[in-house]
Image (tube, rainbow, N blue to C red; front, side, top):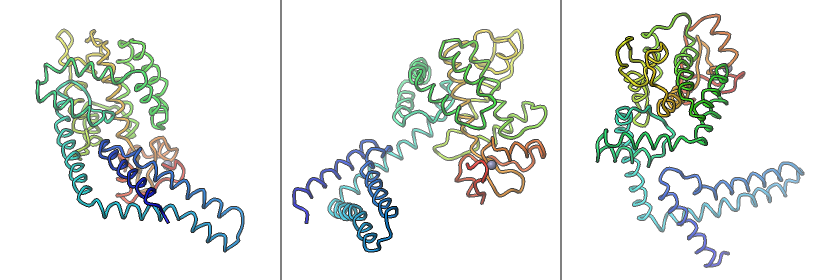
Length: 351
Ligand SMILES: [Zn+2]
């Protein structure tokens, strides 16, 4: 039924689609828009089937009609893949190579970023990450340090910082400390770094205590153990190892009064009043990024022998926390790991 012209048009749009996905490597968002639009068309057609009547003949007619674009698309894709096998194979090989290169950069990035004095963050684009790794390999750590600092301060502008705050505001587990976080972010955005840094630093221990339902005094050893458990994802694309290293090299270092601090962002030296030079934009941003990484590592928890997993702020969890303290408390980074442990989503907090 189709004219040659129509076919040509569709072929062109498909190759444009492939080209787009090649260019963007990882973000397929736009490339799949036509598919999403199709999905909407079908959903609308189905709606019209279910709502008006129970006229069987019409129902089948409507179903056939609603599936027509899907079948057309299916044939189109099928033909396209048949005719362009070699091109697609080359394209996929290129894509695979891109992924391998990114993995290699990500692995190096974990060590480089800590040496450069920054906590890891998942907010960087792949090309930003690979650029830092390339520049480091070409020029070495010291000659790019200032540029990397400038890059971070520039990237995490008002808009990006507000996005982080919005995420915090929608995280149940952070609810009780939101007024502190909001004021700390305000202070950061207004350049009051002597206020933002000491407001943010104690929140690190706070979210760990909340996340593991810790009861009683928390000493350095307890805290270290929690960090080790929380930041134990050894996946190639996880930055846990960098976060752990950043904590131990910069944040958790000890100090003595009367001697220069061993790190420019020592939690003890700053909060015990020994360090009086900590109020810098970079320090303040480092605290925000570290806190963001840590809070993001707490996904869900299961408690005792229960077969559900919950959001950390769930009433069931809060009740358990008081009654049974921290017995049988397991943290899952994401839903997948909770499912792997055969846990089901809680019906109250609906994670
Ligand atoms: Zn729950």
